[in-house]
Image 1 (tube, rainbow over the protein chains, first blue to last red):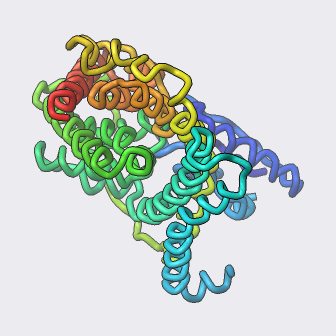
Image 2 (tube, chains in turn purple, brown):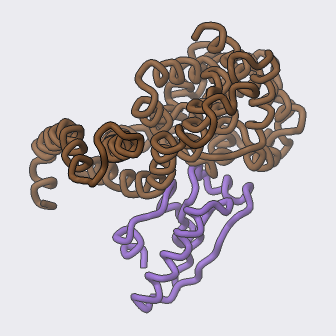
Length: 76
Length: 342
């Protein structure tokens, strides 16, 4: 099972990112463990400067803006 | 189409630019034809209002789409990581000027302000230089400039650009001189410092074109209702509210206090650059003077209560107070200078 974390302090784009990943995982039937990281210190710990960021199994794979559907499909 | 963009991105850009220009040039004659077809008396009040509305709406939206497309492509060259690497270790002065300029071209979302702030400080960008970036990025942006240009002309847009940059550069410089590093929250100061590095850029021109498309979809999709509202106000309101409605409060005859009062009202308010334009349009149409309105607009965009609440997580109260104080003073000076000159 893949672990995906969405980093963001609660702006609209962060929520959209979370929703989009949830939707696409359901569509594809991929089993994922989705988490939302809102704590600023934790976000900075990943070295991400522009939110929303996405962490896949402990590695930052995306930062700054809602990821495209193609990109998300690649992760799942 | 996809294949064409993939294979010859340059040719696509050239053709798109020519189409855009041709379309832009046909807007005015087309709006004449359109309004003439309506059962209205030529030269009447509603005729003129509709003519203005039918010409200005597509004009502004087309301009906005063009500018956002180009900026979306430019943005793809200036990621926050690259900007940080450019600014790390810069001296104050030159650093402040670079930071303010980079603030225009680096993609920036107000929700990223704090992570960006920490990331900059962590990589050794001086505090004052970081502030120059943080002030310039939301205030001097392509949407505000395009709308000012389309609705009020290039002179006002250029003045806004010049004064916005000046405020960002000087405010950052002053904050840097005050040596307020001790007023960062402790956990920020204790974060391990990082070296600013940039990964090699692998984007092709085709990728950048798609990045431009994406920002057009996102930004124009979000701001068009505000643009319509602004133009509708410009076209319609003239006859219905007395022309000098705002003159006593924000006009030339109003006392010196009207500028500080506008800034005081504007600071806690928050709206993005597009949302404020309808208000600016209405205020100007009703006899408010330009300096007062610009000061109001800048204070709404550059400083806001929600932003302060977020910044409080990384800055101690005293530094926030200095930040607000210095920027608000700069904006007020702009208002006074404008009112005196124009």
